[in-house]
Length: 183
Ligand SMILES: Cc1cc2nc3c(=O)[nH]c(=O)nc-3n(C[C@H](O)[C@H](O)[C@H](O)COP(=O)(O)O)c2cc1C
Image (cartoon, rainbow, N blue to C red; front, side, top):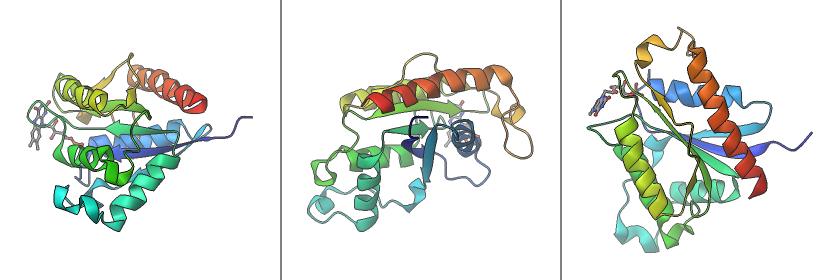
């Protein structure tokens, strides 16, 4: 059997009961046979400040090294005001800079998100995909994973109960794994 791929996962919500964080943990569970997914807490990153380009904080350099050594990343974001979340953007600023080695450049990425509303982060993901293109991330395309009405799709243990959503996720994630293996 092929070695497991190494992935770093990010949730764009810091909320304790976040559906997006639950979705990310479901990615980790669904991929358990083929990937090791390390979940990084975006709340631990300082705000990006260009004054720090010559003195990058250790927590940022540690993350940059993790991402450099990973075969891919998983980005799971809520939609905030028709865009993706600020903590996710903050991470992208840091990891797009030469001072961190720009480790996201050419990195495969899964992109998904969950909302309470009907549109399932479609607008937020559109913004996110534009930014990923600008920093050279190779984002998985279709099927897009846009989880609407998230409060109806997880059980009390954080398991996704909606089989069509699970099927889309698996198709999306297995493309990431294939890209990770060939990169
Ligand atoms: C600041 C803010 C802005 C939001 N904007 C949107 C939005 O534009 N579209 C949407 O569908 N939901 C929006 N929501 C609702 C989120 O979908 C909902 O809070 C969701 O649970 C957030 O994800 P989480 O459960 O991972 O924290 C917004 C929520 C917050 C707190």
